[in-house]
Image (cartoon, rainbow, N blue to C red; front, side, top):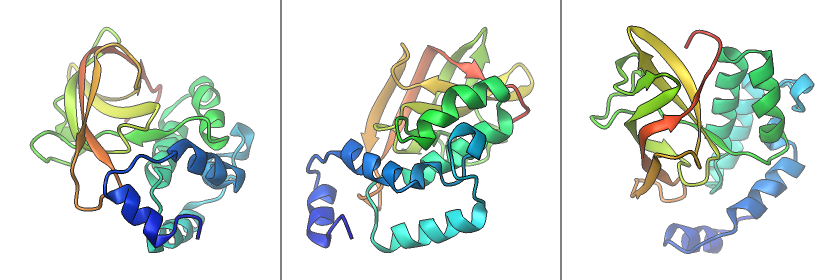
Length: 193
């Protein structure tokens, strides 16, 4: 009920909002840490709770990157090592960081195994389209090829060589963008993608 229909229309018409203020409110409710393990500051709840939260926030078209952040957090939990989980998940759980999964290819391919992004010596080069919350995310999780191996890397939005261009999508309450990586510093998650 925080975001009225009038406010949502204003935001979808392109008005600027204080998304971080709304994000802090969601963090205070514990939503940003819903599926993050308790040892990293989250509630440690499962997919059922995420589904209920997604349904309820979808009913009012919540203009916040909650779902992509929670999905990215699960990727970090599952593919990262203990140090990586400790480095990134507590900030997400506290609402200090927003994360997203950048996996759609410029040609529209959704399969992570079809990625054209290239990882070489800790640097990422490639492009991803339809990245939900690209402009507000602090962390972008990107599948990339390192030789013949598929990797999952974390790129900070403020890393050199990262460029974000807004996209006009079907649902203006869920902003997305195109992201270009040119020799951008990144960190490979320790597990298999």
